[in-house]
Length: 210
Image 1 (cartoon, rainbow, N blue to C red):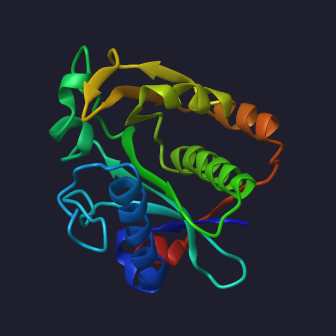
Image 2: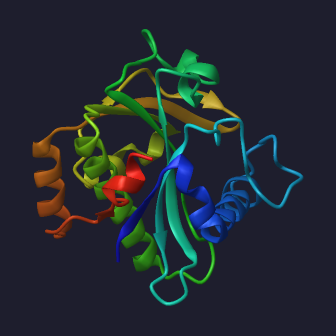
């Protein structure tokens, strides 16, 4: 199973699984978790950050190509969730820079996936995030997550640094985090997760440069 890299100019090539991704985001974040999002009345979850800059990492079923899991990436030099919506979660300035990207909307298909499959999808996406970072001179990621999920992030081998204390938000305790990325991070994660080969399926060089 591979993780596919979907660049902005390639979205038409992935129209069907991306539509499923937005539908699964609605089912998970709105219908199940009860997040009060702008798209609550839609059958898709799409926000202002699914814009022309967004990059997606996508795991699809080997049998039928359906969406099984995904995550969104945004450069921090422009608008992104931490700076525009959750800046108060940071004790200091919101991290920004060409070497810093934001992770958001990590999701897996809510139905027809066994628990062990969900874990594998999340592990593949975690590894693919580090591989993407090393290919693109990214040395750190930021994200906003529920505070109780921090141990799970540590368990895959991510070096996690809190950017502030957990803060109540809509009945949850949210926390802003930074993940530092280096070649050593990838080695540690591959050893811990027992996945020795690259999992990120990047586009062909000529398409990537288009």
